[in-house]
Amino acid sequence: MSTASNSDRTGAARSRTIAASGMLVVLAVVSILQGISALLDDDFYFTRIDYVYKLDTTAWGWIHVVLGLVALICALGLMFDTTWGRYSALGIASLVVLANFMSLPYYPAWSVVVISLGVVVIWAVTTWQPKRTTGRYPHHEPLD
Image (cartoon, rainbow, N blue to C red; front, top):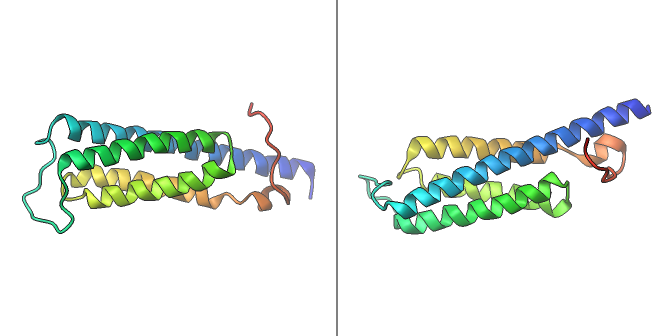
């Protein structure tokens, strides 16, 4: 395999990682804003239907704020291409998707948008396979 081919694949993998970390930052900010809006105004989110997993909007607010803050940390780890960043980004994106699924009754349109963004982050993180790019794990060189 030629060096140019390996370089192209490594560059594409880095680009995908940077894109995934950027999307995770957006997902984190959206979750934090969603949580803050629930914390500041209890009447902002309401539902007319009684669901089994009904929580107080303040509880939902804190859940979203904490998930958003953890997602920001995971995005930094993903940005620097760390192993813990990759796995934690996958885990936190999954938790954000689950939390927004559970908050569908409170704000369905917004939850669907956040779930979709979370699924894109999960796809971006899971599709990069470092062994296929260079035959071994890539070296951690500074990004241009």
